[in-house]
Image (tube, rainbow, N blue to C red; front, side):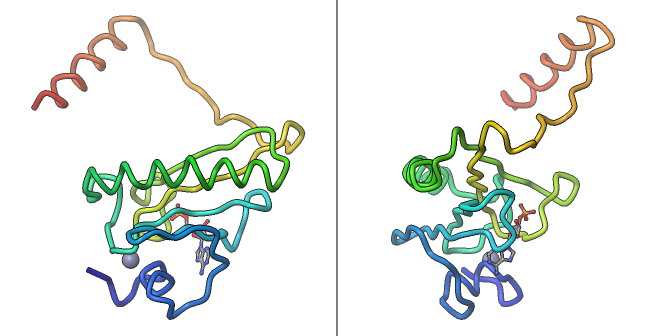
Length: 140
Ligand code: AMP
Ligand code: ZN
């Protein structure tokens, strides 16, 4: 399944070029064209799935395996000190390309990027109630 208007479907089909770093039957990994740090890459399924909830579980497993392999190679090739693996799901979370993908971002001790800002719960009851609500949602 592919989506005619999707840039990552076009890359997966070879209609738009990319700087490929890894490929399997179902997945492709290539350099992000606007890297946070040089070596920043994406892992995408070749088929079009919108986001994390759309992805079949087996493919999710393959994507994690690819992220481990490609991420390790990126760290070694760039001399990075660490690696962020990030997935943006939906516009509010910063997703710009609506074809599921993981970002592999090499990080350096002195790269100046800060951890995102943290907030806090009003009290422990609020945290407990929310945890219980989420737990119930998972159980269905
Ligand atoms: P997201 O905000 O998670 O949807 O990220 C989309 C990412 O795709 C951005 O980091 C873009 O720089 C990257 N991107 C968009 N078009 C291309 C392209 N043709 N080749 C490589 N990376 C791309
Ligand atoms: Zn697509």
